[in-house]
Length: 300
Image 1 (cartoon, rainbow, N blue to C red):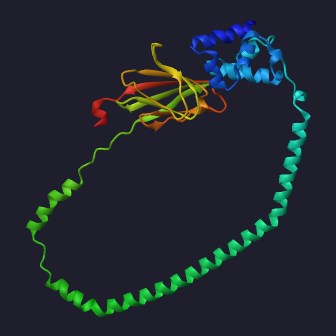
Image 2 (tube, rainbow, N blue to C red):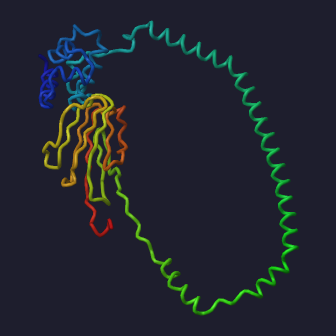
Image 3 (cartoon, rainbow, N blue to C red):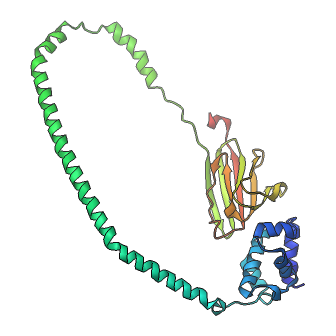
């Protein structure tokens, strides 16, 4: 067994994962995982797969793969671009050229369709504007005729209207004052990123006295949740479509260690947490949430 194999095995056992668990997380056959731990790379399909398998192994047990490759580069075979099969490159070029030719052939039809649609839209707008102007002119004429016919009667009705008494005016004042009273605004919670670097990101949660964390799995990610003292609140591998929710309002700091972060969504008080670091680029992430509980007076 190599030094690299020992390091990977120790990290796996520290996570409480068996080789079968690791096979489910990484989708790598168990015999290849055993070969990685024993340093037996001859059984692998090729050097390229050795590095790819080691990288997936590291991400599943929470190790930085780039750091591992640098530290144990003497134990990891080096791959070169020319080792990739020539056949795949030839097929890719043929596929691209064929798709490009189809697009070029369809361009005249597409442009013709765009021109026809544009002309139809212009005609529709012109007709709509013409009809609208005609309706506006008719409405204006009708309004003017109505004003001419009823001006005198309106003047007569104004003279007959009784004047509003001072009592009525004074009675209306309390209602006006009630309308001017300010309405208290409800303060929404604030969840924002403080900093992020590498695989680590830190968030701040405030303006609320509630603190729940819900995980929704779309794959089979490994999750470890601890408080600020390092005590585990939850750890394990979630199944597909499984949800896990924790009420952690008594904790000021909650830390989430994720393997295969692209397979899990995080909700804080039912607000979806947006990853500060892309989970498709960094699969293994450490997310820290600092909770500042709101004063009861500020939330009322």
